[in-house]
Length: 512
Image 1 (cartoon, helix red, strand yellow):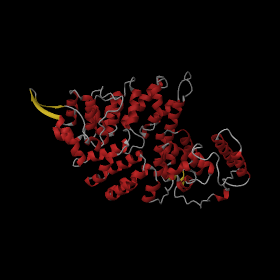
Image 2 (tube, rainbow, N blue to C red):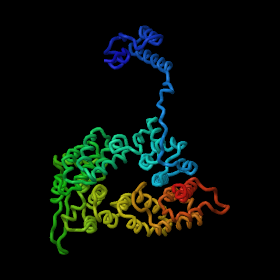
Image 3 (cartoon, helix red, strand yellow):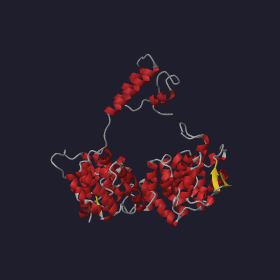
Image 4 (cartoon, rainbow, N blue to C red):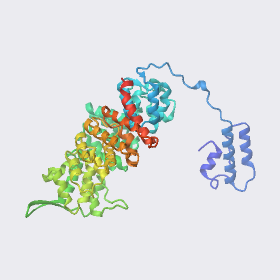
């Protein structure tokens, strides 16, 4: 029990404890005597006496607070910077007004050019990383030794602690940002898959659900049946995301016991019969779910306010957690043929939604293209189709986008599709030069026709769009700063877009 009688009585409750606190007083001196007098003064209730004592003690504590001496703060050793400082003026503008995409590109280019953030801008950069987790991975390499030391002096900057140039994998695993720990695990999986899995399992119980799911995703590298024994117990996870991550990994292994059970559940639902036009497949959802579903992480009871019927929900659950490749292996049909077949069944919506979810979780050759091209519009909305497009290579995506380039009514929607299909920090080539030039030409034409600033959706996307366009074709966009005398001053979105263009054009000069 606490040695503080006031705290002890507050924990017990005034009705269960003594009517007046007794025992040694907390502290000594005038403050302690003052609180003691309050304790002994007559009050209508014991609860009121307790509250007055707590209030008085709190005031005394604040009044007597002595801040730590400044000379107690550790003084850093002289910093040995291995990178040269970037120029302050252009970088300060980017830190103040840049979008996430622009900042990500600037930090990445700085890292490859051997630059670091200069001292006067370190606090602002560290604050950006604290507010925006998407910037932490490219930001850490350009903080320099001074920035990494500074991160140890503020709790809000803890994401950057232990990230010095000499930080080994153990340090990164213990103190690094989530993206760095995922990278450590994926790198170790390339040479020591068992050791990487053991490292994750050792810390797994202490991790929050979102980190569990992200780190489990790193096990896709070098995934094999050797991982099955550690993944199987995770199907009982209460948190949805790590449970789904474990299910996806096991579904990717066709010989795993989990995959075999899922196949055994689905196969009886599919039947093949001979008709006038030859053999045809049909499907009937299960009538009910047995107790084994819960053991495999499947949710047999549909969510409240779900639009699905009971049987449709059961079918969706089975399809969503089975590797899409199984369907072609079982039926002999291609993904495109399966989607066309499913669209004609009574359970088309459940099949399309289940396949969509499965494709996002498991590698599925030709499935994103099949769903995007052949799923009925009423069953897969535009955001889902854009997520499918993001799984394709850039040439395939541009082929789907190109017909919209000359459609003024849908051009703003096209810019949103382009941004969704080019996630921030996505590795690999960006937009091709011809497609990027076509986008630029359309923007310049709309601006000349005074149709750019009046399009709210397009203006909302403009600054971000300027950060995904091919850097060698940006110069024509500088014409957006010029206009006739009747036009209003440049709007804030247009100013931000032009700043992005100017910064990207200037980057090669100061990151060289």
